[in-house]
Length: 181
Image (cartoon, rainbow, N blue to C red; front, side, top):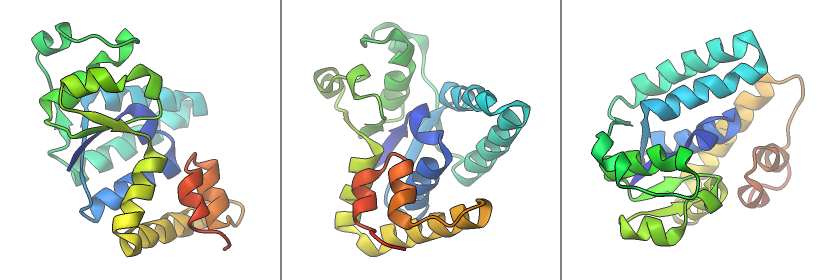
């Protein structure tokens, strides 16, 4: 399955690590466009001058890990599309040109299901997507959760409970699968 990842999934860190962790295990093929990566880099400037530097390094790493993930599109595809927020049309264009099955986004209202269906696409939020993958491959998803949890504890000044970390990362339904430590 090919999944176009919206910027809001790639940034913040824990959500990205969870989603790309399951991709690294072969549960789906991630896709993005250069514009999505550029949006990620610009969003990281909110963290200060080092935020963008860190984001650019992370972008380089995911680009090296998934060299075939970056898709481009012709202006003619972009020009024929409509979405409620015109600033999201590039996401839909990239999904179409990348032959994605799904757009993974936190912005459901900006990607109406009827418009996506006309293009043979569907959408999901990361929490629902990961819960679905957990249902079909629980050991794989649990391994990724444990790895992300260990990294968060190593890099943080506190020790996180798995379910609290996932809830904070806007993955509450997945977090319910991992109550306790």
